[in-house]
Image (tube, rainbow, N blue to C red; front, side, top):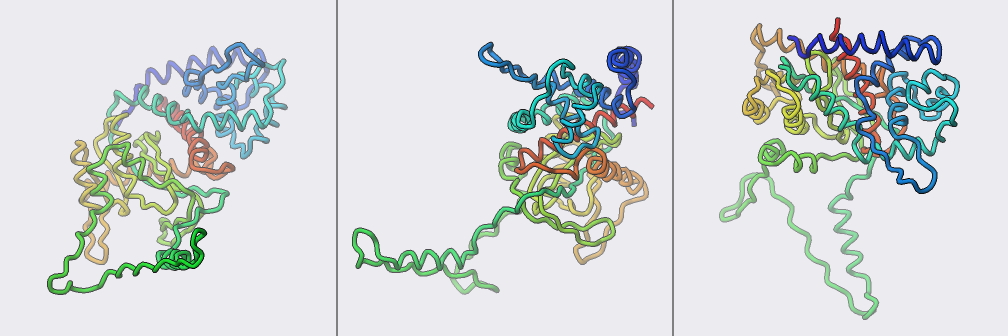
Length: 394
């Protein structure tokens, strides 16, 4: 299905190829194919339209934030792993320096300046805002056939957050603290409270009232707003385990990136969560974010999203859910032949995850904290989105 306007894509392509590239070649000399890809990517995302100028005429003027943002996108496109490597590349490559916007007659910003600018981009959600505008501009008025939803592991170089102390340990600590003498009356001691009775298994006794069962997280999400759902999504670094395509379990320390990918390969929406969070808990928030950006017909998800609530939610949005059935020890319900053919389009999500990791920095996380990790990934997602949009010209 055609998901964008080829005429506009070819118009922008010819503009860069026949006007911008010859002008840059006249200034800095020949350009490599990688640098030409950087130019096309920056022309598509247009970060300068989303960066603010903070200088008010007092003190030394800061470096333009648009130049620094362009450098971070170029870092993802060129596959540079560290900011130090990016600065070294800018020092020796006059063409890249000019492409990002840095004047050739001025010194480059220091590593600390790059780090402070990255913090500003992460706190302000620059990558998310630019990506949303990019999707709405080029795919907002188009009809998307299939929206593929999947989560992928993101390994981070940080220590996993500590879980809460066990209830028995907390109770023992509180009991020991209550037995200690107080400052006002050293001889006075408090009587420890009786521990709460544990929940009994089996049928309740006659006259015993059991508390009502808690609603499932997915059912609770259906009655919440998008802001409430995003507030409840855990984002701390921890340990996660996931089965790969061959059925083996892989464990990692870090986060999990949830992506909605169009059948043309362009990521539509992205969410970052803790590695231990189940994929299905990101389905409803992702679907609402994607529904605000594009119009699609089918929602394609694997067996991890098998839930009657998710199917009902997809139908309420006007979509057709195609979710692989999870038998859970019973009999597996297979797709019809036509549905099986459509479900094969879900491979676009796997390809997008692989390209993000292998080509655009998804495996080289050198920052700590969910906010910075998401900012790093969003620069790669911007480059990936622009690359897939350019491929639609063929």
